[in-house]
Amino acid sequence: MTSTGQQHPDTHLWAVLLAAGSGARLAPALAQGGAAALRKQYLDLEGAPLFWHSARTLARVQAVRGLVFVFPPEDLERQAAVVAELDAGDPLGLPWRCTAGGLRRQDSVRLGLAELPKDCTAVLVHDSARPFVSAELVRRVAAALSGKAVAAIPGLAVTDTIKAVDLGNLVVDTPDRACLRAVQTPQGFLLAPLAAAHARAEAELWEVTDDAGLMERAGHPVIIVPGEEANVKITTPADLDLLTSTMNGAKPPPRTGWGYDVHRYLGSSETHAQARPMILGGIAIPGAPMVIAHSDGDVLLHALTDALLGIACAGDLGQLFPDTNARFENMPSAVFVTEALRLVRAAGFRPVHADLTVIAQIPKLGPHKARMAAQIAQLLELAPGAVNVKATTEEGLGFTGEKRGLKAVAVVTALPG
Image (cartoon, rainbow, N blue to C red; front, side, top):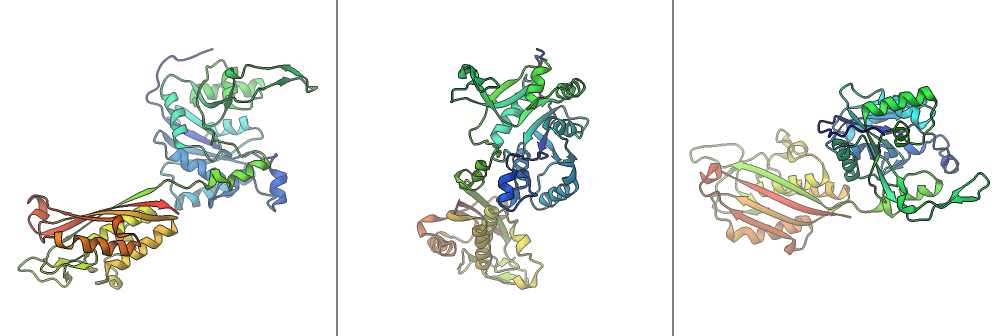
């Protein structure tokens, strides 16, 4: 056994995502479904190939600096184009590379390692057939590599009694299940010892089922970190049900959107073609300063629109309704809210609560807050008690304190469904 015994705080970590398998155990089931040429790693899950779900999870972990996708040689060019297209519409936010795999899993890993950048010092190896892996599990393995581990793999305690049998199917031993773990991916390794172990395996004709086994045989210690029950592998025809079952059908978590907007007032000695009477939350505010705006200048509904767009991950107000477009000249801001709400619903969410604040030294908004809240509740199709509107000043500070303008913030909570 060998170990560095030292911490590795400056780990430069990449991930190798294995999508080069043939999926032989699933092939008959896929053929019955009319997908004879389809490999399991390309199966559709929520509008994206199975492998892309793991890629997105890995990319969300800050410690992961890049990804190497490993595809079957005959699929490499086509799948590299698929990755490029997916990344254009749903950016991973980190560098990626594609390479061809080999006949065996260990060959595909070795070829994937060869694509890692020269400054890479550690690697996660993950099976694309485990699309339900969580970012927390990835972080757990990565954290072990930043500590003293040379190799770290997720594992679950075995709950069934396990029997060892001979070639005639006769039981020869009953191992103590307290000492057994069912292992998963991603498996994490320092790169230099893993690469050396693969070179030795190639030279000495080793056959292993995972990289942890390779490291064990090479004499390196392998530690177990807690795995996850949900991190199942799509392997047999029965596993296909998981792609449409309650595991995959579990609702996403709630979302919170935050919006901000600001408008300046028309100066006392100023004229401006886009000066508008003040409207807040769809309510006219009599006696208030004029505001300068391309649309109707409703700063509160503009902040609300941005908060809704945040929930839908649909950009911002300026992208959807640019002030350079003459069609939006003096347009009621309720139109913006209605369109943003449509996008929220198209994303599979529904607002349940809104909390909004207007920041202005003038005018006094206390008498108007209840009407604003009621109007916004109607726009969002919520009960009046689900919308709160507040007003505050900045104690004479800044441009609002100097009575040169006003601003607003909005926070909207939405649930899936």
